[in-house]
Length: 175
Image (cartoon, rainbow, N blue to C red; front, side, top):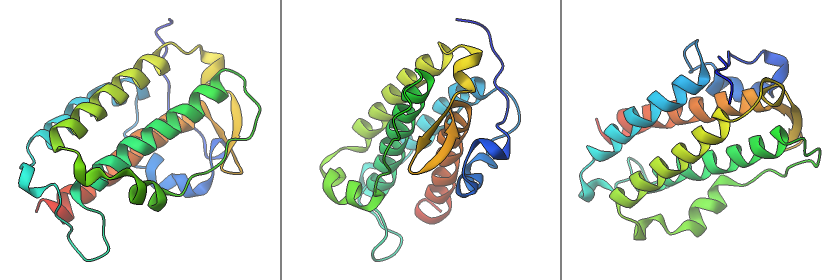
């Protein structure tokens, strides 16, 4: 579609909880961030030894595979929210309980290579979806998890959520 440069959302475009993610994203065009981030994250994931997949840095914490699965699940859910809002769907979108998703996903049965591939495919599909949006769609507002949010804020939240969890992966699991 158009060659838009989508800048940072303003604080009135998302719930303050998501500032912890949005603030991690460097200034600039979010489409470039999402595209570049995919290569960086895949590089990180591909460097993890298969034996490390079930490692937990503490009791009751997610394993490496579960953390990666959480990044994938969250991106999928937030992109779904963005799609619905971008298309003008005014129906409020429910929240989700991340720990229930982890408990029921059985990520331990997945290989790290398969999780990396799934991340790549999800990110590529979401990048293409975001890339196709009009400027009007980027600024549409909807309700997700009981809070108003824009499509632009959801894209930044996806990118920031990934940064947040990749930092945890590096600092607590792989150091």
